Amino acid sequence: MSLSLAPNENAPNDNGSGLTIADFHARVDALLPLIEEKANEAEELGHMSDEVVAALRESGIYTMMFPKAVGGAEVTPFEALTVFERLSYAHASAGWCSMVNNMEGMTMAIYIEDEGVETVFKNGPDITIAGNGVPRGFARPVDGGYMIKGNWAYGSAIHHAEWIHTGCFITDDAGKMVIQPNGQPKIIICHHPRSTIRLLGNWDVLGLRATGSFDYTIADAEELFVPHYMTYDFDIGAPLRGGPQGVLGLAGYSALGHTCWALGVGRRMLDELIKVIVQRTDAFGKSSDSASFRFQFAQAEAKFRAARALAYESWRSVSDTCVSGEKPTQHQLTMVKLTLRHIHDVISDVATFAHRSARGASLHNTPMQRFYRDVHSGTQHILMADQIFEECGRALMGLTDPDAQWTVFGVAD
Image (cartoon, rainbow, N blue to C red):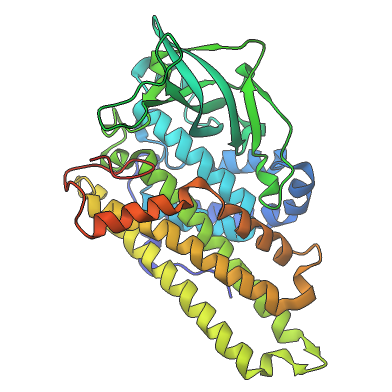
């Protein structure tokens, strides 16, 4: 049971690059055999293979969301969803790394100052970027920028990164965190060359092994100078370039990336289960003849398809609003944040059902075992925190300031 696209999802999009979303899907078609072939090798390496990363870069998929202003295709969020979903279906880590590069590169391209754009994109949009925007370090203001220090975790795709995306709490000269009027600490995202960091080599995990999400720290010194023009405010709301969809910011683009990923891996778990069940006969007879299993499988299908429909509805709405030149509303962003957590809850349930129903089949080194581990690794991300879901409930009940914007972790009112 393969993923399918509704007819209008391959409609042309004049993005200025000469490429339509149909072109990107054709490139996905060409890449999928290689991605599947190299998946086990990547799992053993602990990061994506050089060959697959090079192919994704050459295809333009690694940077397809980048704005036209830096030479990107600037595909809409919904269009990107349909691509990342398919990559994640083939190999969870390939989909994860692709959405990370797009999310972190896209936000850098639309938010840093012109001097920073000229530095990073002087040779065009084909750059790789990784790191962790969740603040685990500190930035001390100095003339022209910041001195940053700290240790950061989960630098997904960092093995192949040329630039690093790093979140820091701003401090005063005494090292005390700066607190904003709303009571929240002030955070910035810093960008610096790969040569400025050292990987800590500790990516020994349950799943998503091929993402190479190593911890990292500053190399060769305790602090690193980052120019102001290579930073942006964590809660920034006004993009400097990139069209109306730029207002989605880290809050929107992080929700998009992880939602796409969940759609692909959830579908793959159910499809792998079908392969096991249809051919299995054991002491209890032919597994697919079990009325109990059929009932439970139908429930799992319904739950997943309903969650996928919600994701498609929510992101079509946001994309249509952006294409029309309007800014998505707080309610629209609430729905994409709600969708993000909901689809992860659903795939957790679906994967557990598939694993148990398959009995010993998913214990072996098979795609089913790998996707089971990947699903239950992706659900651990901080974006799935209960506190963010609580914020969705607050907004849906009308308890937030209607003019307040969504940040990564909640509504800033």
